[in-house]
Image 1 (cartoon, one colour):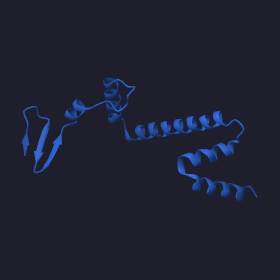
Image 2 (tube, rainbow, N blue to C red):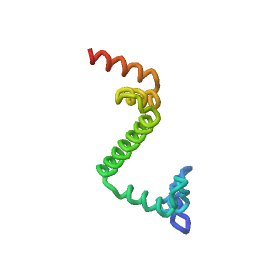
Image 3 (spheres, rainbow, N blue to C red):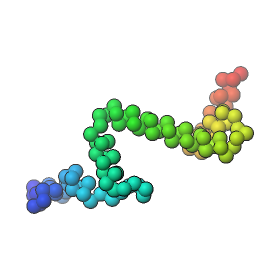
Image 4 (cartoon, helix red, strand yellow):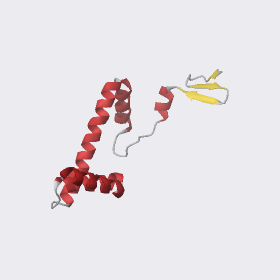
Length: 111
């Protein structure tokens, strides 16, 4: 095992393990519209958050994205019913086969 003078690289056989600080120092912004320093703060907050908090954040973001996608479908197709918006969402994001199966299941349930 060898540690470089900066203490950021550890060599063990063939693997090189870098400390989290060294990885963060080399990090490039993942988002084009977010300042690198702001992104570092966001990632640090996520790393420090509990698993429950991270899960809650992920679910909240997912719900927001789904709702925004459904709003876009409604805006482009104001004549669609809520069920048709749902089916269009499923077709776009999960494929027409699943949307067809869902439509058939909803129709069976309605009868």
